Length: 322
Length: 316
Image (tube, rainbow over all chains, first blue to last red; front, side):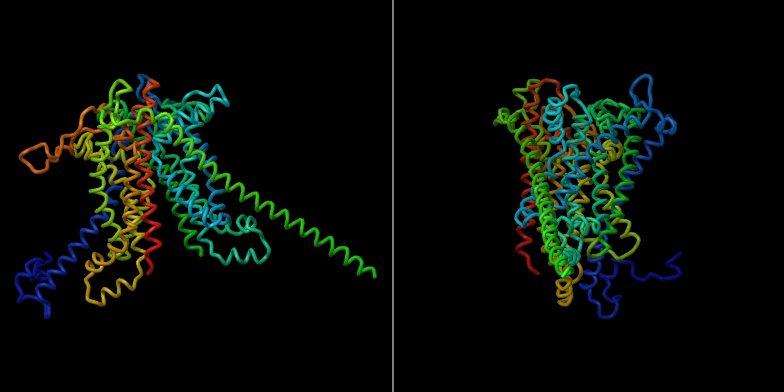
Protein backbone atom coordinates (compact mmCIF):
# COMPACT_ATOMS: atom_id res chain seq x y z
CA UNK A 1 0.00 0.00 0.00
CA UNK A 2 2.70 2.40 1.03
CA UNK A 3 4.72 1.88 -2.11
CA UNK A 4 1.81 2.84 -4.29
CA UNK A 5 1.49 6.13 -2.48
CA UNK A 6 5.18 6.81 -2.03
CA UNK A 7 7.00 5.06 -4.83
CA UNK A 8 10.14 3.60 -3.28
CA UNK A 9 12.54 3.71 -6.19
CA UNK A 10 15.61 2.46 -4.41
CA UNK A 11 15.12 -0.27 -1.88
CA UNK A 12 18.07 -0.22 0.53
CA UNK A 13 21.00 -2.30 -0.65
CA UNK A 14 20.38 -1.87 -4.34
CA UNK A 15 21.57 1.71 -4.31
CA UNK A 16 25.24 0.98 -3.94
CA UNK A 17 25.26 -1.19 -7.03
CA UNK A 18 23.54 1.41 -9.21
CA UNK A 19 25.67 4.52 -8.98
CA UNK A 20 23.48 6.37 -11.41
CA UNK A 21 20.64 6.48 -8.88
CA UNK A 22 22.67 8.13 -6.15
CA UNK A 23 21.72 11.49 -4.73
CA UNK A 24 23.93 14.24 -6.04
CA UNK A 25 27.46 14.22 -4.73
CA UNK A 26 27.20 10.80 -3.14
CA UNK A 27 29.84 8.27 -3.87
CA UNK A 28 29.26 4.56 -3.56
CA UNK A 29 31.80 4.40 -0.75
CA UNK A 30 30.01 7.06 1.23
CA UNK A 31 26.76 5.20 0.89
CA UNK A 32 28.27 1.92 1.95
CA UNK A 33 29.63 3.64 5.02
CA UNK A 34 26.24 5.08 5.81
CA UNK A 35 24.65 1.67 5.58
CA UNK A 36 27.36 0.17 7.78
CA UNK A 37 26.77 2.93 10.31
CA UNK A 38 23.06 2.15 10.35
CA UNK A 39 23.75 -1.56 10.76
CA UNK A 40 26.07 -0.93 13.69
CA UNK A 41 23.56 1.32 15.38
CA UNK A 42 20.85 -1.32 14.98
CA UNK A 43 23.12 -4.01 16.42
CA UNK A 44 23.96 -1.87 19.42
CA UNK A 45 20.29 -1.11 19.97
CA UNK A 46 19.50 -4.82 19.90
CA UNK A 47 22.16 -5.35 22.58
CA UNK A 48 20.46 -2.70 24.70
CA UNK A 49 17.08 -4.28 24.11
CA UNK A 50 18.29 -7.59 25.57
CA UNK A 51 17.72 -6.11 29.03
CA UNK A 52 14.12 -5.33 28.13
CA UNK A 53 13.64 -8.86 26.80
CA UNK A 54 15.11 -10.24 30.04
CA UNK A 55 12.64 -8.34 32.17
CA UNK A 56 9.78 -9.32 29.91
CA UNK A 57 10.87 -12.96 30.03
CA UNK A 58 11.17 -12.92 33.85
CA UNK A 59 7.69 -11.45 34.25
CA UNK A 60 6.20 -13.74 31.59
CA UNK A 61 7.65 -16.95 33.04
CA UNK A 62 6.76 -16.12 36.65
CA UNK A 63 3.24 -14.96 35.80
CA UNK A 64 2.61 -17.85 33.41
CA UNK A 65 3.52 -20.56 35.92
CA UNK A 66 1.83 -18.68 38.78
CA UNK A 67 -1.44 -18.44 36.86
CA UNK A 68 -1.46 -22.22 36.55
CA UNK A 69 -0.66 -22.46 40.26
CA UNK A 70 -3.46 -20.09 41.29
CA UNK A 71 -5.95 -22.16 39.32
CA UNK A 72 -5.40 -24.94 41.87
CA UNK A 73 -4.75 -22.81 44.94
CA UNK A 74 -7.08 -19.89 45.63
CA UNK A 75 -5.27 -16.58 46.13
CA UNK A 76 -7.03 -16.12 49.49
CA UNK A 77 -5.57 -19.37 50.85
CA UNK A 78 -2.16 -18.36 49.54
CA UNK A 79 -2.28 -15.08 51.45
CA UNK A 80 -4.02 -16.15 54.68
CA UNK A 81 -3.02 -19.75 55.44
CA UNK A 82 -0.22 -19.93 58.00
CA UNK A 83 1.22 -23.25 56.90
CA UNK A 84 3.40 -23.98 53.91
CA UNK A 85 3.52 -27.69 53.23
CA UNK A 86 3.08 -28.03 49.45
CA UNK A 87 4.84 -31.37 49.23
CA UNK A 88 2.86 -33.12 52.00
CA UNK A 89 -0.34 -35.12 51.50
CA UNK A 90 -2.16 -32.50 53.55
CA UNK A 91 -0.95 -29.65 51.36
CA UNK A 92 -1.11 -26.08 52.63
CA UNK A 93 -0.01 -23.09 50.59
CA UNK A 94 0.29 -20.22 53.07
CA UNK A 95 3.03 -17.89 51.86
CA UNK A 96 2.93 -16.17 55.28
CA UNK A 97 4.89 -19.09 56.73
CA UNK A 98 7.72 -18.23 54.33
CA UNK A 99 7.27 -14.46 54.58
CA UNK A 100 7.72 -14.59 58.36
CA UNK A 101 11.14 -16.17 57.88
CA UNK A 102 12.09 -13.63 55.24
CA UNK A 103 10.89 -10.75 57.43
CA UNK A 104 12.64 -11.97 60.58
CA UNK A 105 16.02 -12.58 58.94
CA UNK A 106 15.75 -9.24 57.11
CA UNK A 107 15.04 -7.34 60.33
CA UNK A 108 17.97 -8.99 62.12
CA UNK A 109 20.18 -8.14 59.14
CA UNK A 110 19.04 -4.51 59.14
CA UNK A 111 19.69 -4.18 62.88
CA UNK A 112 23.32 -4.96 62.07
CA UNK A 113 23.75 -3.28 58.69
CA UNK A 114 21.95 0.05 59.24
CA UNK A 115 23.79 1.27 62.37
CA UNK A 116 27.19 -0.08 61.33
CA UNK A 117 26.78 0.97 57.71
CA UNK A 118 25.74 4.49 58.71
CA UNK A 119 28.53 4.88 61.25
CA UNK A 120 31.07 3.70 58.68
CA UNK A 121 29.66 6.04 56.06
CA UNK A 122 29.75 9.08 58.38
CA UNK A 123 33.20 8.13 59.59
CA UNK A 124 34.63 7.59 56.12
CA UNK A 125 33.05 10.66 54.60
CA UNK A 126 33.50 13.17 57.44
CA UNK A 127 36.10 11.92 59.92
CA UNK A 128 38.62 9.50 58.47
CA UNK A 129 42.03 10.78 57.44
CA UNK A 130 42.70 10.52 53.71
CA UNK A 131 44.98 7.50 54.12
CA UNK A 132 42.47 5.52 56.18
CA UNK A 133 39.78 6.18 53.58
CA UNK A 134 42.04 5.12 50.71
CA UNK A 135 42.58 1.75 52.40
CA UNK A 136 39.15 1.26 53.97
CA UNK A 137 37.07 1.83 50.85
CA UNK A 138 38.68 -0.84 48.67
CA UNK A 139 38.68 -3.15 51.69
CA UNK A 140 34.93 -2.75 52.16
CA UNK A 141 34.50 -3.28 48.43
CA UNK A 142 36.40 -6.55 48.74
CA UNK A 143 34.12 -7.61 51.60
CA UNK A 144 31.17 -7.01 49.29
CA UNK A 145 32.77 -9.28 46.72
CA UNK A 146 32.90 -12.38 48.93
CA UNK A 147 30.60 -15.08 47.53
CA UNK A 148 27.42 -15.55 49.55
CA UNK A 149 28.05 -19.28 49.88
CA UNK A 150 31.21 -18.46 51.84
CA UNK A 151 29.14 -16.23 54.14
CA UNK A 152 26.71 -19.14 54.54
CA UNK A 153 29.52 -21.44 55.58
CA UNK A 154 30.71 -18.78 58.02
CA UNK A 155 27.22 -18.42 59.53
CA UNK A 156 26.69 -22.15 60.00
CA UNK A 157 30.14 -23.18 61.18
CA UNK A 158 31.45 -20.10 62.96
CA UNK A 159 28.70 -17.70 64.05
CA UNK A 160 26.21 -20.35 65.20
CA UNK A 161 28.76 -22.21 67.38
CA UNK A 162 29.88 -18.88 68.89
CA UNK A 163 26.26 -17.91 69.62
CA UNK A 164 25.65 -21.36 71.10
CA UNK A 165 28.44 -20.70 73.62
CA UNK A 166 26.51 -17.63 74.81
CA UNK A 167 23.06 -19.14 74.51
CA UNK A 168 23.34 -22.95 74.68
CA UNK A 169 19.72 -23.70 73.77
CA UNK A 170 20.13 -22.21 70.31
CA UNK A 171 19.44 -24.83 67.63
CA UNK A 172 22.04 -25.56 64.96
CA UNK A 173 19.86 -23.91 62.33
CA UNK A 174 18.47 -20.53 63.36
CA UNK A 175 17.42 -17.25 61.82
CA UNK A 176 19.58 -15.24 64.23
CA UNK A 177 22.96 -16.27 62.91
CA UNK A 178 21.74 -16.19 59.31
CA UNK A 179 20.37 -12.67 59.85
CA UNK A 180 23.53 -11.45 61.59
CA UNK A 181 25.79 -12.69 58.82
CA UNK A 182 23.45 -11.31 56.18
CA UNK A 183 23.69 -7.97 57.98
CA UNK A 184 27.48 -8.10 57.87
CA UNK A 185 27.22 -8.99 54.21
CA UNK A 186 25.20 -5.90 53.32
CA UNK A 187 27.24 -3.44 55.43
CA UNK A 188 29.54 -2.58 52.47
CA UNK A 189 26.48 -2.05 50.31
CA UNK A 190 24.78 0.33 52.77
CA UNK A 191 27.99 2.15 53.68
CA UNK A 192 29.12 2.80 50.12
CA UNK A 193 25.73 4.10 48.97
CA UNK A 194 25.36 6.23 52.12
CA UNK A 195 28.86 7.60 51.71
CA UNK A 196 28.14 8.55 48.11
CA UNK A 197 25.08 10.44 49.32
CA UNK A 198 27.09 12.29 51.98
CA UNK A 199 29.86 13.11 49.53
CA UNK A 200 27.24 14.65 47.25
CA UNK A 201 26.44 17.26 49.93
CA UNK A 202 28.26 20.40 48.76
CA UNK A 203 31.31 21.51 50.72
CA UNK A 204 29.99 25.04 51.34
CA UNK A 205 27.31 23.65 53.63
CA UNK A 206 29.97 22.08 55.82
CA UNK A 207 32.06 25.24 55.68
CA UNK A 208 29.11 27.34 56.79
CA UNK A 209 28.56 24.99 59.69
CA UNK A 210 32.23 25.10 60.74
CA UNK A 211 32.17 28.89 60.47
CA UNK A 212 29.38 28.94 63.02
CA UNK A 213 31.69 27.08 65.39
CA UNK A 214 30.20 23.63 64.98
CA UNK A 215 32.42 20.61 65.53
CA UNK A 216 32.87 17.80 63.03
CA UNK A 217 30.30 15.61 64.78
CA UNK A 218 27.77 18.45 64.97
CA UNK A 219 28.30 19.19 61.29
CA UNK A 220 27.99 15.53 60.39
CA UNK A 221 24.86 14.93 62.46
CA UNK A 222 22.98 18.22 62.07
CA UNK A 223 24.04 19.39 58.59
CA UNK A 224 25.38 16.60 56.38
CA UNK A 225 23.10 13.77 57.52
CA UNK A 226 19.84 15.69 57.09
CA UNK A 227 21.00 16.93 53.69
CA UNK A 228 21.84 13.39 52.61
CA UNK A 229 18.78 11.84 54.24
CA UNK A 230 17.03 10.67 51.09
CA UNK A 231 20.29 9.09 49.93
CA UNK A 232 20.72 7.34 53.27
CA UNK A 233 17.11 6.13 53.16
CA UNK A 234 17.61 4.81 49.65
CA UNK A 235 20.70 2.88 50.78
CA UNK A 236 18.70 1.27 53.61
CA UNK A 237 15.87 0.38 51.27
CA UNK A 238 18.17 -1.14 48.68
CA UNK A 239 19.79 -3.00 51.60
CA UNK A 240 16.36 -4.39 52.52
CA UNK A 241 15.85 -5.49 48.97
CA UNK A 242 19.23 -7.28 49.03
CA UNK A 243 18.41 -8.99 52.33
CA UNK A 244 14.98 -10.12 51.12
CA UNK A 245 16.48 -11.67 47.99
CA UNK A 246 19.51 -13.22 49.68
CA UNK A 247 19.48 -16.98 49.29
CA UNK A 248 22.50 -19.02 50.23
CA UNK A 249 23.13 -17.66 53.73
CA UNK A 250 19.57 -18.40 54.86
CA UNK A 251 19.36 -21.69 52.97
CA UNK A 252 22.50 -22.94 54.72
CA UNK A 253 22.23 -21.42 58.19
CA UNK A 254 18.51 -20.95 58.92
CA UNK A 255 17.35 -24.42 57.97
CA UNK A 256 14.80 -25.05 55.25
CA UNK A 257 11.77 -25.86 57.38
CA UNK A 258 8.84 -23.47 56.81
CA UNK A 259 7.88 -22.14 60.22
CA UNK A 260 5.41 -19.36 60.95
CA UNK A 261 7.43 -17.60 63.62
CA UNK A 262 9.06 -14.27 64.26
CA UNK A 263 11.43 -15.66 66.88
CA UNK A 264 14.97 -15.34 65.51
CA UNK A 265 16.26 -18.19 67.67
CA UNK A 266 14.09 -20.68 65.79
CA UNK A 267 14.87 -22.32 62.48
CA UNK A 268 12.72 -21.24 59.54
CA UNK A 269 12.65 -21.12 55.77
CA UNK A 270 12.57 -17.93 53.73
CA UNK A 271 11.01 -17.63 50.29
CA UNK A 272 14.43 -17.99 48.70
CA UNK A 273 15.40 -20.97 50.88
CA UNK A 274 12.20 -22.72 49.85
CA UNK A 275 13.01 -22.29 46.16
CA UNK A 276 16.46 -23.78 46.79
CA UNK A 277 14.96 -26.66 48.74
CA UNK A 278 12.58 -27.55 45.92
CA UNK A 279 15.31 -27.17 43.30
CA UNK A 280 17.48 -29.59 45.30
CA UNK A 281 14.84 -32.28 45.03
CA UNK A 282 13.75 -33.79 41.76
CA UNK A 283 10.29 -32.39 41.11
CA UNK A 284 8.76 -33.21 37.75
CA UNK A 285 8.27 -30.31 35.36
CA UNK A 286 4.65 -29.15 35.51
CA UNK A 287 3.76 -30.60 38.94
CA UNK A 288 2.18 -28.40 41.63
CA UNK A 289 5.45 -28.46 43.59
CA UNK A 290 7.25 -27.14 40.51
CA UNK A 291 4.70 -24.34 40.15
CA UNK A 292 4.96 -23.30 43.83
CA UNK A 293 8.50 -22.05 43.32
CA UNK A 294 7.29 -19.73 40.57
CA UNK A 295 4.48 -18.40 42.76
CA UNK A 296 7.01 -17.91 45.56
CA UNK A 297 9.38 -16.28 43.09
CA UNK A 298 6.68 -13.92 41.87
CA UNK A 299 5.98 -12.87 45.48
CA UNK A 300 9.69 -12.27 45.99
CA UNK A 301 9.97 -10.26 42.77
CA UNK A 302 7.01 -8.06 43.74
CA UNK A 303 8.47 -7.35 47.20
CA UNK A 304 11.92 -6.46 45.88
CA UNK A 305 10.37 -4.45 43.06
CA UNK A 306 8.50 -2.23 45.54
CA UNK A 307 11.68 -1.60 47.54
CA UNK A 308 13.79 -1.06 44.42
CA UNK A 309 11.39 1.49 42.99
CA UNK A 310 11.19 3.29 46.34
CA UNK A 311 14.98 3.27 46.66
CA UNK A 312 15.45 4.44 43.10
CA UNK A 313 12.99 7.28 43.61
CA UNK A 314 14.73 8.42 46.79
CA UNK A 315 18.16 8.22 45.18
CA UNK A 316 17.02 10.32 42.27
CA UNK A 317 15.83 12.92 44.72
CA UNK A 318 19.14 13.34 46.46
CA UNK A 319 20.92 13.53 43.11
CA UNK A 320 18.74 16.38 41.99
CA UNK A 321 18.72 18.26 45.29
CA UNK A 322 21.97 20.19 44.78
CA UNK B 1 31.14 49.82 89.98
CA UNK B 2 28.52 47.18 90.25
CA UNK B 3 28.15 46.58 86.50
CA UNK B 4 31.91 46.35 86.12
CA UNK B 5 32.30 43.67 88.76
CA UNK B 6 29.32 41.75 87.41
CA UNK B 7 30.67 42.09 83.91
CA UNK B 8 34.11 40.89 84.86
CA UNK B 9 32.92 37.93 86.87
CA UNK B 10 30.29 36.88 84.32
CA UNK B 11 32.67 37.11 81.40
CA UNK B 12 35.25 35.12 83.32
CA UNK B 13 32.76 32.41 84.20
CA UNK B 14 31.42 32.69 80.64
CA UNK B 15 34.81 31.95 79.17
CA UNK B 16 35.25 29.02 81.52
CA UNK B 17 31.77 27.80 80.63
CA UNK B 18 32.57 28.05 76.94
CA UNK B 19 35.87 26.25 77.38
CA UNK B 20 34.04 23.43 79.12
CA UNK B 21 31.50 23.34 76.30
CA UNK B 22 34.20 23.20 73.65
CA UNK B 23 36.05 20.52 75.56
CA UNK B 24 32.86 18.49 75.85
CA UNK B 25 32.15 18.78 72.15
CA UNK B 26 35.74 17.87 71.34
CA UNK B 27 35.32 14.76 73.50
CA UNK B 28 32.21 13.78 71.57
CA UNK B 29 34.10 14.29 68.33
CA UNK B 30 36.90 12.11 69.56
CA UNK B 31 34.43 9.47 70.76
CA UNK B 32 32.77 9.28 67.36
CA UNK B 33 36.15 8.98 65.66
CA UNK B 34 36.79 6.06 68.01
CA UNK B 35 33.39 4.54 67.18
CA UNK B 36 34.14 4.74 63.46
CA UNK B 37 37.54 3.15 63.97
CA UNK B 38 35.92 0.40 66.03
CA UNK B 39 33.37 -0.23 63.28
CA UNK B 40 36.19 -0.59 60.77
CA UNK B 41 38.03 -2.83 63.21
CA UNK B 42 34.89 -4.95 63.57
CA UNK B 43 34.67 -5.38 59.79
CA UNK B 44 38.33 -6.35 59.71
CA UNK B 45 37.86 -8.83 62.55
CA UNK B 46 34.89 -10.44 60.83
CA UNK B 47 36.93 -10.81 57.68
CA UNK B 48 39.84 -12.23 59.66
CA UNK B 49 37.51 -14.72 61.40
CA UNK B 50 35.94 -15.76 58.12
CA UNK B 51 39.26 -16.19 56.38
CA UNK B 52 41.02 -17.65 59.41
CA UNK B 53 38.40 -20.30 60.06
CA UNK B 54 38.50 -21.45 56.44
CA UNK B 55 42.28 -21.44 56.50
CA UNK B 56 42.40 -23.57 59.66
CA UNK B 57 39.78 -26.07 58.48
CA UNK B 58 40.67 -26.14 54.82
CA UNK B 59 44.46 -26.01 54.58
CA UNK B 60 44.99 -29.68 55.55
CA UNK B 61 42.80 -30.65 52.59
CA UNK B 62 44.60 -28.46 50.08
CA UNK B 63 47.00 -30.54 48.07
CA UNK B 64 47.74 -31.21 44.44
CA UNK B 65 45.34 -34.19 44.59
CA UNK B 66 42.52 -31.90 45.74
CA UNK B 67 42.70 -30.09 42.41
CA UNK B 68 43.12 -33.21 40.30
CA UNK B 69 40.54 -35.54 41.89
CA UNK B 70 36.84 -35.90 41.23
CA UNK B 71 34.33 -35.60 44.08
CA UNK B 72 34.03 -38.84 45.96
CA UNK B 73 31.99 -40.52 48.65
CA UNK B 74 35.08 -40.60 50.81
CA UNK B 75 35.89 -37.13 52.10
CA UNK B 76 39.64 -37.60 52.21
CA UNK B 77 40.03 -38.45 48.53
CA UNK B 78 37.39 -36.04 47.19
CA UNK B 79 38.57 -33.19 45.01
CA UNK B 80 37.40 -30.26 42.92
CA UNK B 81 38.59 -31.20 39.43
CA UNK B 82 35.14 -31.25 37.83
CA UNK B 83 34.18 -28.12 39.80
CA UNK B 84 37.00 -25.84 38.69
CA UNK B 85 36.85 -27.08 35.09
CA UNK B 86 33.08 -26.45 35.15
CA UNK B 87 33.57 -22.97 36.62
CA UNK B 88 36.05 -22.03 33.89
CA UNK B 89 33.79 -23.32 31.10
CA UNK B 90 30.66 -21.62 32.49
CA UNK B 91 32.59 -18.37 32.92
CA UNK B 92 33.76 -18.66 29.31
CA UNK B 93 30.15 -18.80 28.09
CA UNK B 94 29.16 -16.00 30.46
CA UNK B 95 31.97 -13.73 29.30
CA UNK B 96 31.41 -14.43 25.59
CA UNK B 97 27.72 -13.52 25.95
CA UNK B 98 27.78 -10.75 28.56
CA UNK B 99 30.83 -8.74 27.47
CA UNK B 100 29.76 -7.83 23.90
CA UNK B 101 26.11 -7.40 24.88
CA UNK B 102 26.92 -5.29 27.94
CA UNK B 103 29.46 -3.06 26.19
CA UNK B 104 27.18 -2.71 23.15
CA UNK B 105 24.22 -1.73 25.30
CA UNK B 106 26.34 0.73 27.28
CA UNK B 107 27.68 2.37 24.10
CA UNK B 108 24.21 2.55 22.62
CA UNK B 109 22.74 4.22 25.71
CA UNK B 110 25.57 6.75 26.03
CA UNK B 111 26.43 7.55 22.41
CA UNK B 112 23.51 6.66 20.17
CA UNK B 113 20.23 6.67 22.07
CA UNK B 114 17.97 9.62 21.46
CA UNK B 115 16.03 10.99 24.39
CA UNK B 116 12.77 9.15 23.86
CA UNK B 117 10.40 6.71 25.49
CA UNK B 118 12.29 3.63 24.33
CA UNK B 119 15.53 4.90 25.85
CA UNK B 120 13.76 5.68 29.11
CA UNK B 121 12.30 2.18 29.19
CA UNK B 122 15.71 0.60 28.58
CA UNK B 123 17.34 2.72 31.28
CA UNK B 124 14.69 1.96 33.90
CA UNK B 125 15.00 -1.67 32.94
CA UNK B 126 18.72 -1.84 33.49
CA UNK B 127 18.42 -0.18 36.91
CA UNK B 128 15.64 -2.55 37.81
CA UNK B 129 17.42 -5.68 36.65
CA UNK B 130 20.41 -4.80 38.81
CA UNK B 131 18.11 -5.10 41.84
CA UNK B 132 16.40 -8.37 40.92
CA UNK B 133 17.51 -11.16 43.32
CA UNK B 134 19.79 -13.70 41.67
CA UNK B 135 17.46 -16.59 42.44
CA UNK B 136 14.82 -15.00 40.18
CA UNK B 137 17.30 -15.32 37.30
CA UNK B 138 17.48 -18.98 38.25
CA UNK B 139 13.71 -19.31 37.89
CA UNK B 140 13.87 -17.51 34.53
CA UNK B 141 16.56 -19.90 33.38
CA UNK B 142 14.63 -22.92 34.65
CA UNK B 143 11.54 -21.94 32.71
CA UNK B 144 13.24 -20.53 29.62
CA UNK B 145 16.65 -22.09 29.00
CA UNK B 146 16.17 -25.49 30.63
CA UNK B 147 12.65 -26.31 29.43
CA UNK B 148 11.63 -23.92 26.61
CA UNK B 149 14.97 -23.94 24.78
CA UNK B 150 15.64 -27.53 25.81
CA UNK B 151 19.19 -26.80 26.95
CA UNK B 152 18.74 -28.95 30.05
CA UNK B 153 21.04 -28.62 33.06
CA UNK B 154 23.97 -27.76 30.85
CA UNK B 155 27.00 -25.49 30.79
CA UNK B 156 25.25 -23.36 28.15
CA UNK B 157 22.14 -22.86 30.33
CA UNK B 158 24.24 -21.88 33.36
CA UNK B 159 26.50 -19.60 31.32
CA UNK B 160 23.56 -17.78 29.75
CA UNK B 161 21.87 -17.36 33.15
CA UNK B 162 24.95 -15.83 34.72
CA UNK B 163 25.46 -13.66 31.62
CA UNK B 164 22.01 -12.12 32.06
CA UNK B 165 22.74 -11.72 35.77
CA UNK B 166 25.93 -9.69 35.27
CA UNK B 167 24.70 -7.79 32.22
CA UNK B 168 23.56 -4.76 34.29
CA UNK B 169 26.99 -4.63 36.00
CA UNK B 170 28.79 -4.48 32.64
CA UNK B 171 26.31 -1.96 31.19
CA UNK B 172 26.56 0.40 34.18
CA UNK B 173 30.37 0.18 34.24
CA UNK B 174 30.56 0.88 30.51
CA UNK B 175 28.26 3.86 30.79
CA UNK B 176 30.13 5.34 33.72
CA UNK B 177 33.45 4.91 31.94
CA UNK B 178 32.11 6.56 28.76
CA UNK B 179 30.59 9.43 30.70
CA UNK B 180 34.01 10.54 31.98
CA UNK B 181 35.28 11.14 28.42
CA UNK B 182 35.08 14.85 27.73
CA UNK B 183 32.88 16.07 24.89
CA UNK B 184 35.71 17.86 23.09
CA UNK B 185 37.33 14.51 22.20
CA UNK B 186 34.20 13.61 20.23
CA UNK B 187 33.98 17.05 18.67
CA UNK B 188 37.63 16.92 17.63
CA UNK B 189 37.11 13.59 15.92
CA UNK B 190 33.95 14.74 14.17
CA UNK B 191 35.77 17.86 13.00
CA UNK B 192 38.32 15.61 11.31
CA UNK B 193 35.48 14.00 9.38
CA UNK B 194 34.97 10.86 11.46
CA UNK B 195 31.73 8.98 11.30
CA UNK B 196 29.97 8.08 14.51
CA UNK B 197 31.29 4.54 14.57
CA UNK B 198 34.80 5.81 13.90
CA UNK B 199 34.50 8.13 16.89
CA UNK B 200 33.26 5.24 19.01
CA UNK B 201 35.76 2.62 17.85
CA UNK B 202 38.82 4.87 17.64
CA UNK B 203 38.23 7.00 20.72
CA UNK B 204 35.35 6.11 23.01
CA UNK B 205 36.08 2.38 23.39
CA UNK B 206 39.87 2.65 23.87
CA UNK B 207 39.57 5.49 26.38
CA UNK B 208 36.86 3.81 28.42
CA UNK B 209 38.52 0.40 28.33
CA UNK B 210 39.98 0.46 31.88
CA UNK B 211 36.56 1.31 33.31
CA UNK B 212 34.86 -1.34 31.21
CA UNK B 213 37.46 -3.93 32.21
CA UNK B 214 36.84 -3.12 35.87
CA UNK B 215 33.13 -3.73 35.42
CA UNK B 216 33.64 -6.94 33.46
CA UNK B 217 36.03 -8.36 36.06
CA UNK B 218 33.75 -7.42 38.97
CA UNK B 219 30.81 -8.94 37.13
CA UNK B 220 32.67 -12.18 36.42
CA UNK B 221 33.89 -12.36 40.02
CA UNK B 222 30.29 -12.11 41.11
CA UNK B 223 29.24 -14.77 38.63
CA UNK B 224 31.91 -17.19 39.87
CA UNK B 225 30.48 -17.05 43.38
CA UNK B 226 26.80 -17.22 42.41
CA UNK B 227 25.20 -20.35 43.75
CA UNK B 228 21.46 -19.79 43.95
CA UNK B 229 20.59 -19.47 40.23
CA UNK B 230 22.67 -22.54 39.37
CA UNK B 231 20.99 -24.61 42.07
CA UNK B 232 17.63 -23.40 40.79
CA UNK B 233 18.22 -24.73 37.29
CA UNK B 234 18.69 -28.08 39.02
CA UNK B 235 22.41 -28.52 38.55
CA UNK B 236 23.17 -29.98 41.97
CA UNK B 237 24.29 -33.42 40.93
CA UNK B 238 27.17 -35.73 41.52
CA UNK B 239 29.56 -35.06 38.64
CA UNK B 240 32.60 -37.31 38.57
CA UNK B 241 33.59 -36.74 34.95
CA UNK B 242 34.71 -33.89 32.74
CA UNK B 243 32.75 -32.42 29.82
CA UNK B 244 33.94 -33.67 26.42
CA UNK B 245 37.04 -31.84 25.28
CA UNK B 246 36.56 -29.34 22.44
CA UNK B 247 39.30 -31.15 20.55
CA UNK B 248 37.93 -34.66 21.03
CA UNK B 249 36.22 -34.95 17.66
CA UNK B 250 38.77 -35.50 14.90
CA UNK B 251 36.33 -34.43 12.17
CA UNK B 252 35.87 -30.92 13.50
CA UNK B 253 38.53 -28.46 14.50
CA UNK B 254 36.66 -27.43 17.64
CA UNK B 255 33.57 -29.27 18.82
CA UNK B 256 30.93 -27.58 20.93
CA UNK B 257 29.58 -30.72 22.53
CA UNK B 258 30.77 -29.51 25.95
CA UNK B 259 28.21 -26.71 25.87
CA UNK B 260 25.39 -29.18 26.45
CA UNK B 261 27.23 -31.35 28.95
CA UNK B 262 26.15 -31.63 32.58
CA UNK B 263 28.51 -29.89 34.96
CA UNK B 264 29.22 -28.70 38.45
CA UNK B 265 30.87 -25.47 39.58
CA UNK B 266 32.90 -24.44 42.62
CA UNK B 267 30.13 -22.92 44.77
CA UNK B 268 27.81 -25.84 44.01
CA UNK B 269 30.48 -28.33 45.02
CA UNK B 270 31.04 -26.34 48.20
CA UNK B 271 27.31 -26.27 48.99
CA UNK B 272 27.16 -30.00 48.37
CA UNK B 273 29.88 -30.58 50.95
CA UNK B 274 28.42 -28.14 53.49
CA UNK B 275 25.08 -29.92 53.43
CA UNK B 276 26.66 -33.34 54.08
CA UNK B 277 26.05 -34.47 57.65
CA UNK B 278 29.53 -36.03 57.98
CA UNK B 279 32.02 -33.76 59.70
CA UNK B 280 34.87 -34.81 57.40
CA UNK B 281 33.25 -33.09 54.42
CA UNK B 282 33.30 -29.72 56.21
CA UNK B 283 37.06 -29.66 55.70
CA UNK B 284 36.50 -30.18 51.97
CA UNK B 285 33.94 -27.38 52.01
CA UNK B 286 36.44 -25.10 53.73
CA UNK B 287 39.15 -25.96 51.22
CA UNK B 288 36.79 -25.35 48.29
CA UNK B 289 35.67 -22.10 49.93
CA UNK B 290 39.27 -21.04 50.28
CA UNK B 291 39.93 -21.63 46.57
CA UNK B 292 36.71 -19.80 45.68
CA UNK B 293 37.59 -16.91 48.00
CA UNK B 294 41.07 -16.57 46.52
CA UNK B 295 39.57 -16.59 43.00
CA UNK B 296 36.94 -13.90 43.64
CA UNK B 297 39.08 -11.73 45.90
CA UNK B 298 42.00 -11.67 43.48
CA UNK B 299 39.65 -10.74 40.64
CA UNK B 300 38.11 -7.96 42.73
CA UNK B 301 41.54 -6.76 43.79
CA UNK B 302 42.64 -6.70 40.16
CA UNK B 303 39.56 -4.65 39.25
CA UNK B 304 40.16 -2.19 42.08
CA UNK B 305 43.82 -1.92 41.10
CA UNK B 306 42.96 -1.22 37.45
CA UNK B 307 40.56 1.49 38.49
CA UNK B 308 42.95 3.24 40.89
CA UNK B 309 45.90 2.89 38.53
CA UNK B 310 44.17 4.36 35.49
CA UNK B 311 42.32 7.01 37.41
CA UNK B 312 45.69 8.39 38.44
CA UNK B 313 47.16 8.10 34.97
CA UNK B 314 44.44 9.63 32.83
CA UNK B 315 44.32 13.41 32.84
CA UNK B 316 42.01 14.99 30.32
